[in-house]
Length: 265
Image (tube, rainbow, N blue to C red; front, top):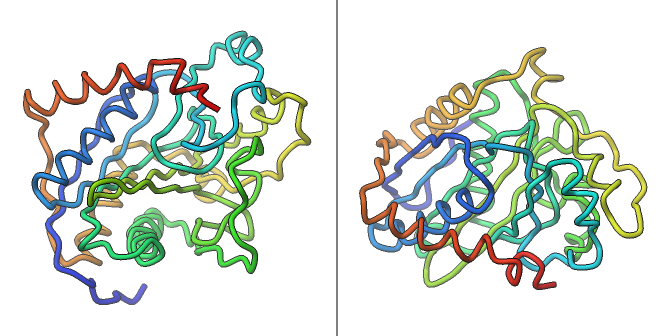
């Protein structure tokens, strides 16, 4: 892949965190926004989830549209992301987040493109030749259809099928972008949990299908860090959370545990 010039020189940090429940994962990402606001550093985080969890997009309709009893009967957790988009089942997938100062990242499409280049190059280093979707239609409103039902402009595709979904949130000069890269396909389960039940979604692409095996969190994180080195011309330094950061993340967990937030719409 040709290396486009980096629009703005940036300091990058990276971190791989252990599997955690949904509320802790979302709180950690929001705390990273505070870190970026204080330091102007871009932060790449790669992580997984301690048990299967459905995340709803920030403005997605979920109350009365998803069967909570059915969700609980399967042992799934539920959380609402601070970012937009639609429902994702976090189980056999890898999640990444990027926080960045908006002044350096630019407008929404420019920032998506810059982050997507990093993810695409990381996937290429794993041996996956993904591409960026450029549909003619605009992104759908965040209804009850699962995220992997169809791609929106800027999301990542493999052989015509969606491989990774992403969404972004901006607040007080900092952006947070979430992305979910499928290892295996279990997203069709979400269609069985809606009210009324939705039709099955088209089969998305997966890393196991592309590679013949399931890459680890560490392998994906290393490939993405190498991609930052290549495209951003900077060595991303490890981020080690201090006590103040952990205290901030712990304080934010309360919000993501609150049903008033999870089921606000």
